[in-house]
Length: 168
Image 1 (cartoon, rainbow, N blue to C red):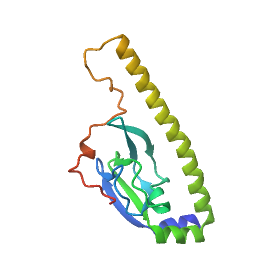
Image 2 (cartoon, rainbow, N blue to C red; image 1 turned 60 degrees about the vertical axis):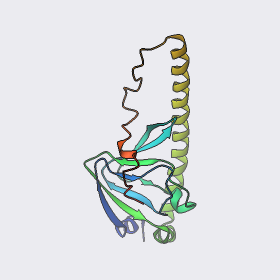
Image 3 (cartoon, one colour; image 1 turned 90 degrees about the vertical axis):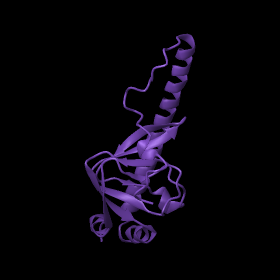
Image 4 (spheres, rainbow, N blue to C red; image 1 turned 45 degrees about the vertical axis):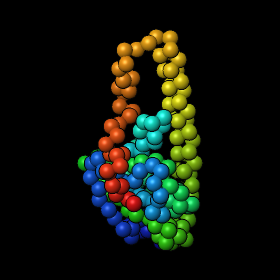
């Protein structure tokens, strides 16, 4: 059986704009996901702010660390499209897909390595910019206005303690 056939057998969930699939740091439920429709954004808390790292588009896997080592979620995932359709891959399904479709493991490993490099570079760039901003602020004091106007941070509402993650 090929990858397409394996994906067609996944349990599906639909979630709406603004909903949090899971939050950074919460224990995982041992599931990863495949995005069929919609767009999700990945946020990481850096120096007390939720910073967008990247978007997840249809055809992408994510959340694989929950399958591999059951670690807490490394980032928060928020739906930014009107809705999103996701396939759930639990450990049992992961094992079946791995055996039935060796291409699945290759694609997953390739994507994980790409994301690792990409995320590391983005985090380094964010920290470098913060260091530069700190140095500039020491030289040229500001009036106290927010420097975050480029949309790279989001309001904390989706990440409040009252928000219930969908995927947990």
